Image 1 (spheres, rainbow, N blue to C red):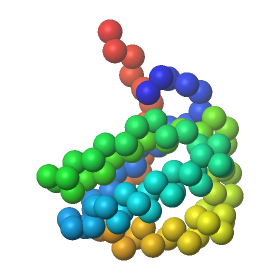
Image 2: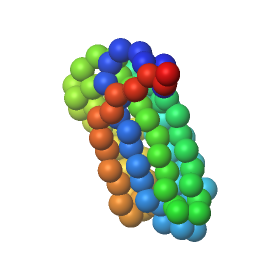
Image 3: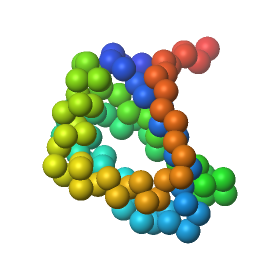
Length: 100
């Protein structure tokens, strides 16, 4: 993360073990919709051994207002199928700590 302005969310999902490719196909489509709504994807990490997917997004403005519009986007509504591949999740607001 480059420490840019805005709000950063760290999102962690537990993925159904044999559904990685299906999940990633849907996730890539989700990323395209997020970007159209002004979100930046900072990174995405796949831990297939533990079935954990971790990614971070940032929005430069009011992230709650942007999320409200994003989740009402008809294309995003179609992508609710992502829930088929996720058994648990957590989302937290994070800040970057400078590395000395």
